[in-house]
Image 1 (tube, rainbow, N blue to C red):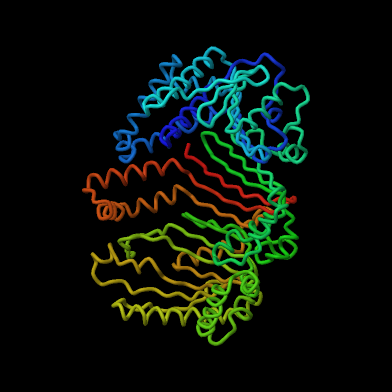
Image 2: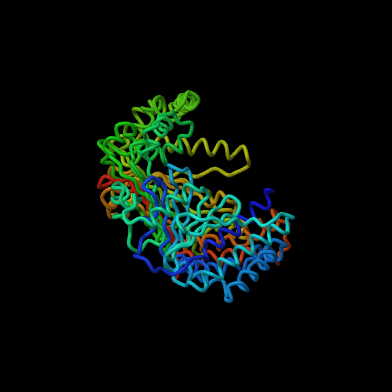
Length: 583
């Protein structure tokens, strides 16, 4: 069988598997009852039709379909062939595909990977016998038509297993019984499932204790839930070997180093997707002893796994905010155990340069050692009023907030900041950029050291100033907090916000929040720049570029925002990602 034919047959079969089944006359069995106990990968979609309707009918989908790229794709030959195939399917079914798919998958779709047979199986439950028969006939005819087009004979082979008629198309085997459409890529896998279907007391996944424990925790509103058994991989030592390898990526270690370390000791992982008209929420979870994981990655989890991220800061017009527990002093101190020789050489090189920047002080012990674990980063859309210098390209203001162990050593950071401004002025002067004007002032109990560019004399330039006018670098000190901001207004706003921000929920390791509407407004601020960039990069004329940018911005309005949280509590490590949609 040729590769193109195989691909087409697989496509035909997968389409058919979404539409095939017969009514149930026997005692109801779940997919978990049918799948063998040796399944180590499982996924379920309780109501596929509703999920499809949600994606297809949502306003965001309609906005994307209006984009020029989508309209162009609809004119391609591949799309037209797809429409022809769709028409053939609907003719065979006697009705439109979407309502038919909704009926024929009303009992859910289920997937399993079986370790014993090394096979995969797909099960779909339906209650419409007549339509299921049409769907079966249609899928087989599509497979035969595809084979005929390639000059091959009938690809459908019929068989029988314990009185159940089976069909084989290429490498795929399928059977229909008691309302179940069962499809597998291995005969042995199919036989396992059929035996469980026929036997009164099957040895199935439903009786596996670890799976039962994980399944009992799933959300009842989940539209997709999946499970992976890691015990075999744990026994081979593969995960432990991978986790013990020294990293060559410091950023990756900061983001996911703790998760990678905890994975070899996790018996399983689960994923849950919840969706409705207002939100999509994905959750990944695994059992985790964070105290044990912290012995290897204390910088990530904290002492005894008790690390807690600081408050999530949300000043006005926040487009991005992050709060995370990370002990940079511990990371730097343990770098020889965490990173490979190449990265450690770069650490040594960087430490030499940073020692110079901090006036000869040891960067690891005197600088990082004076900072408590935890970091807050916030980005806001900048606001301009009449008389302000307005940059032609408007960039967000960004601020970093850290907590000092000894506030009396704030002078170290103040002097370093002043030296850094001097360095910027020297570098800027070499490129024809005017110097920053450095100032220091007291605001309440806070010390604020800021630098600003003198406004241009030309009035036209003030309304479309160079990019550097987005910046007014500022270092602020209030109590034991150190604020480093790209813009003075943001630093001043944080002076009041930082001490009064509400704490994050217990067990929060990392929290991120993005306000989609503020991001949208920030992009709209630079609409002309985006149009110009589109014209230069894609070769569009202004009308085409403006239409494309307008379409993307309109689609973006459908996303209200997103949050990402890494939680470590109740013996579990969980990553929650939620996308909120506009009403």
